[in-house]
Image (cartoon, rainbow, N blue to C red):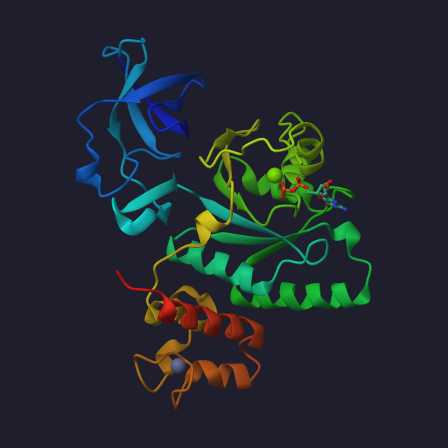
Length: 313
Ligand SMILES: Nc1nc2c(ncn2[C@@H]2O[C@H](COP(=O)(O)OP(=O)(O)O)[C@@H](O)[C@H]2O)c(=O)[nH]1
Ligand SMILES: [Mg+2]
Ligand SMILES: [Zn+2]
């Protein structure tokens, strides 16, 4: 008998797979999948949809993964020194949330823009969440947030305002997670775990306060892990944003992953325009006309400069 399932966790040598009936089993990969054939360091990633056979068991009685479905999308990290190609972090994502805070701590728009660019490059719809609304009392912070909210909505992104303390936006975020495979990312301390616990009181994810008290120095795993949501759907709480941020882009490609730049770049005089010093640039004109946020453009310019500095392999 064969079953279909989804990979929730990978230890490197075996996998936890959730079957369609909700049961979770341990499975190994049948020998025929060799890494050289896939160009990846890991043949199976969290989020992969797989076929499981219970007829072929290994010595310990684990089921076998006999087939991997084509991926709709995936996010990857470059493997060290490119020896074995790419390391797939997670596959088949419906959406990615960047959790940011304007205060305590302040997330930079450069960081948010890099995340959005990366999501765009991987074809994953992204949502911006500004958390800890209860702490926004200073007029300066409120003003800052208003600018950012306008900026990201104008760029075409959904923006949510949340607080685990007041409950603002929590139900809304919960509804967006329903029956979807979602990636949640953001700097440590912005309140990701607390937010998930407020949406799903049965989940009990470790938050900073608890982990500092009881688990000082505990090694945090670098493997991605997918949680099954109580009301249906899956959530990947990434161990670090770094893993989602590294992307081998050419300078020319950057503008194509900025939705509001992509929409106007055909108006540039030169079709290889980087929208920096070139004459007849529709993108720079849009900034001057106030149609493209200067802050988004500035971050774009930074990212392009970084891609120029990257060593090419
Ligand atoms: N004031 C306030 N504090 C929050 C909020 N959400 C989380 N925190 C606090 O921020 C710290 C980090 O939260 P945590 O969920 O561990 O962040 P993570 O690292 O992103 O998972 C903890 O001390 C939380 O109590 C919020 O909405 N408002
Ligand atoms: Mg956390
Ligand atoms: Zn241009």
